[in-house]
Length: 373
Ligand SMILES: NC(=O)c1ccc[n+]([C@@H]2O[C@H](COP(=O)([O-])OP(=O)(O)OC[C@H]3O[C@@H](n4cnc5c(N)ncnc54)[C@H](OP(=O)(O)O)[C@@H]3O)[C@@H](O)[C@H]2O)c1
Image 1: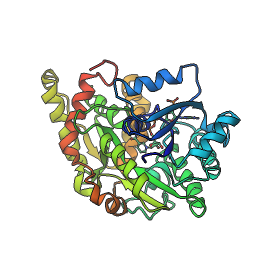
Image 2: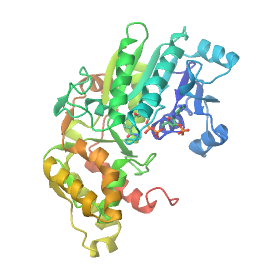
Image 3: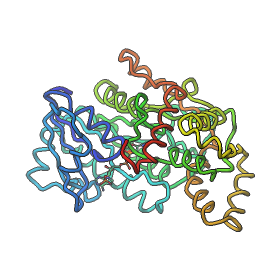
Image 4: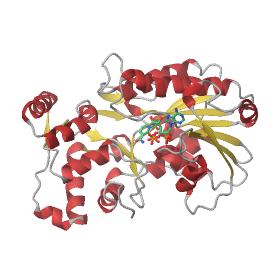
């Protein structure tokens, strides 16, 4: 992307921030980082993300909003110049909350993406528009989910986030005939494979905390089925490689697949052994391992917690059940198309058991992001 101009939305988010750090050190690249308008100074927000990094790209911070129409909240002059120069778009903005009402999730993820597509239609030099999505657009399907497949196939969704992202994909697919677009479906991003640093805490990290506090007595799922997680450094490097090299239109899974994933039972074991290793005092508390149960048993458990459980257990169960149900619909994400494009680059998902313990350590040391470390 040397000598080119990229519009990055969601630059202050977990994935967008990782992408921004990688792009910022590319000489000659022009970056227009769209930061949501708020009472916080957008330059300060971007500075906090870049830290001490030696920025060699031409970085331009733009205040805007993907929700306000195809102008993305930019004034006329800025809009015209950004449209004129943009060669690449990475759309990483949106809502990742699992608990929003469907209408709010649609406003962020479907209407917002429609505005970015309309913006893209005005970019005469556009070479690639990459829309970040999730492998969980597959909803409650089970089995292998290929990159060529779309949506829940009538099985339903676990939460409003999944549904809104599947609907977002529909409008992106409809525009693929007229624009050079790719959909990049990410698996669950847990942290950096070398340092364990977590850019954005999500349900997986929350589940680790509940296990640590002995508040996850049961988890639904099949002990032998894989739980797909990926590192943030793999996702950032692979996304940028796809943006530059993938055939368009195209759909790509950035996922561990069966080969690099631990099974649910193994992942729980890795969590328990990492907590014991990095916080020896925890072992003495002799917290029970969560039981892996079938969906009916888990639903019974959720109902009984709602009826008779204490407030702490109720809150804990509510917090993870929006994702926990996904574990009861196990799938394997095929990665053939992404692997083909990434083959020559040396970029590949790491085995989750090789880096996940570092993420657990980071959760402990940072007290789940509330303490600098
Ligand atoms: N992280 C994962 O594990 C994961 C997994 C699968 C897929 N993905 C996909 O990857 C993408 C990025 O996810 P993420 O984890 O980085 O999300 P995130 O941390 O929640 O960040 C979302 C970003 O979107 C921005 N945003 C939200 N509404 C906006 C608006 N109206 N106008 C402008 N900006 C707006 C947010 O700005 P503020 O900072 O102002 O809120 C933030 O920068 C999403 O498409 C998500 O579906 C992520």
